[in-house]
Image 1 (tube, one colour):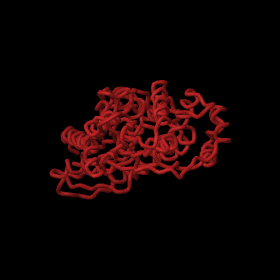
Image 2 (tube, rainbow, N blue to C red):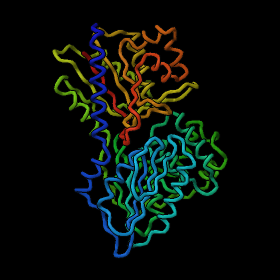
Image 3 (tube, helix red, strand yellow):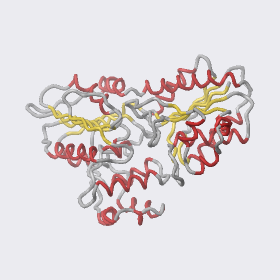
Image 4 (cartoon, rainbow, N blue to C red):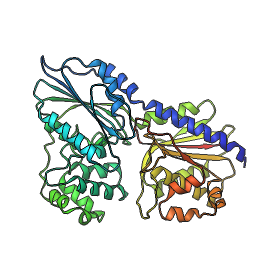
Length: 424
């Protein structure tokens, strides 16, 4: 074991992660896409309506501004940590991952503008990750507080993003194609930065410009199967029992401008001169306990090499919260990786990074963590039990003790998560 190599490995992992974030730069992705898919023009005397939503919304909107002429309406809803300014736009900085009143006001303003659209107007939707929670538009009879309760239950359930958005779409006036229904007969063109593994447009920001993932009946069945339906507010239970199926025939021009795969490749290219590179095509998804077994098996089973190795994944895991601690899926994954490697030590020096490209993992100030074979020893050295932290889902506190948190601040983008395993 050569522990003196660990700081250099950690520096390389952090450098590669920064490369992944740069590749997901929303302004760059927007400009490249507009070269292939120019903005449509409204009819004479009509408006361009630009609705930007998600964690990358300000940067995407700024990239579009120079290409808009004539009458316009511009609304931007992003998360409160993103302080980027957008001249001429109404900007709402809302709560995430739990919706708040600012997001509700932004959603209502978007609904008003969409309902005012006429056939000659064009609607430009700039969609990025986080838009689902940032833009609550509950149906009649459902309060914002009820939507907040729904979101908290879904976030703690262990459901993946597609399943969560199946439910969210059925309790919204904007999600699951709601933007198209409100804008009709105006044309909608969407530019979408994906935070969903596999780039299912129906799941990104809960799919405001595409047909819904499922039906109210399917949402009810899913919630019943998870034991969540009877825990929902009565208004949402009633709505899901009575909601009609949405019209799935409306279409938009949807353009995917970037996603997780491109960012993982950018991280790999950053490391390529010094490392033997392996990009794992099978993403890290599903329950964090299953995902960590894959990452640890990769570390344990790696063979000898004349060159340091870099193994990279993209993904988005889930955590079924059972304790009252503070953390996020990336911190949980990293701490569990360190625990498995502590129980079955590996001779070669290694580090493991797991982080969200938006710079925020769960309700914490960390993007994720970079752990190594000494992580648990550092926690124990401060008189604490790593197992107790894991039992209460308190990965943030544990990784703060071991000084392994990765803190980037809000990045202004979001293309899901990146995992990097470096072996010296």
